[in-house]
View 1 (tube, helix red, strand yellow):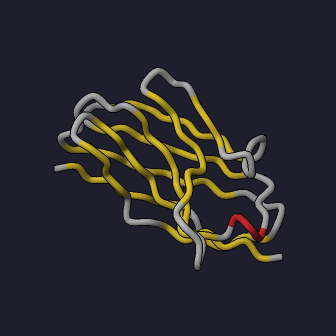
View 2: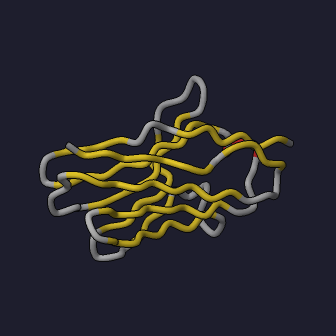
Amino acid sequence: QVQLVQSGGGLVQAGGSLRLSCAASGSIFSINVMGWYRQAPGKQRELVAGITSGGRTNYADSVKGRFTISRDNAKNTVYLQMQMNSLKPEDTAVYYCNVNDLRGDYWGQGTQVTVSS
């Protein structure tokens, strides 16, 4: 089994910052890519940022220059973070961490990010 536990998020004013974290543990085999997705009300889930096992990153155009994804490996646990700066009201959504390994996709429980104008 694979467990993804998210923390962080919350309510912030426009222009503020938040940090999301995700701890992935369990039977994870050969991670291909990890990432953060978000889903706003009435919209489809979208990729916000991703990072490969080799450290290559990619970002949605809407967050480039404002969000930074990173990962750290520890014994039996992989930590995924995302620093979100200069937040905008349109960043409001539920954010999910994702791990893709040889067996498929795993998702965190989701965390609400609300940016007030």
